[in-house]
Image (cartoon, rainbow, N blue to C red; front, side, top):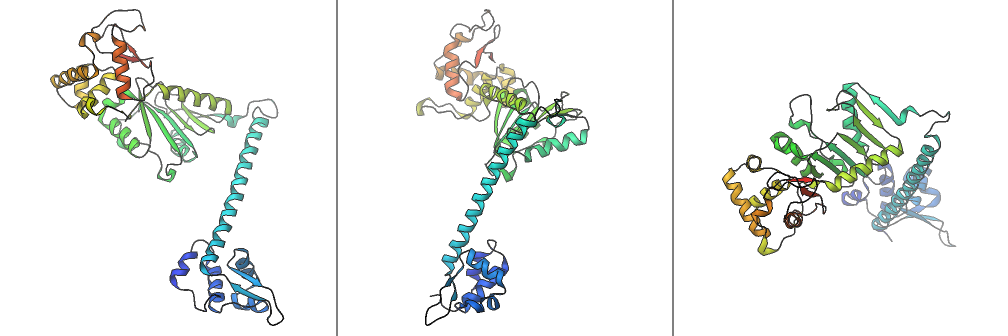
Length: 372
């Protein structure tokens, strides 16, 4: 039996936000009186609707009449009442999920039935051209809000105006890790300090970022529903908005192919304790894998060329590779230079995440790699 007492602030806090305030007040009055005769319930708690809500949510129950007592509306103890409320919400969520799944099935059916148009003409909404700059900008930003599972983008950071840090488009905080955000950037963007900060900022916000020697075009892709492609190099003067399922599937496949070829911005590199490079040496190794020469490595790493060459000598020794393996040899296009297989394997093991065969010799240059 529940002791007769007015519900205090701590108990009220159990129900706030879970049920309406008037339901909490009705439960308060019922709990304070330790229940009442069923025929008096409406007068005590407020009205018939509140009586029904209390019983439906499990916050009260009707005790049947007996020879000695009439039917009685009794409050559940606060813990059991809260449990009943949570069960009710769980049931609502389950019904909502069923409706959502049913809606997606209907959407897939509608796309299959009407995708080619009832009159045989291609429906305009599946592919549209946008040329208004303001609309392109708004679509570019709002498209990310539509993602529910996957957000993918190709970005070369080409702009009509000087690049600034407000160009960044990091994962939304509302995603909360529920949306997988992946972006592939043009590796040359890392030469620009602003672009480098943009890419790192997006990665710090939860984006999975990778680099390719060349990103052929920009692209934004939300789930299996919508893609945005540029019609100009920067994408600001014209864009193609695609919702056709067949094209979306092909674009996703294209992105996944590039993703496998791309190098992680911050790869996981398992190493043996006795064979560990210093952070500076690791940075030089990663820049070597991008195919940069000593001078550009020095500029990117912010060190002197002499220091770069000293790091490279240590790297060669740690990887068990002779400097002669990097001697430029003119061979048929795509053929590895003598000894390079050992270098490639060592770099792949060191960097991690680079698919086997992704690095190949570029003829005619020392320590020069390219992606296949």
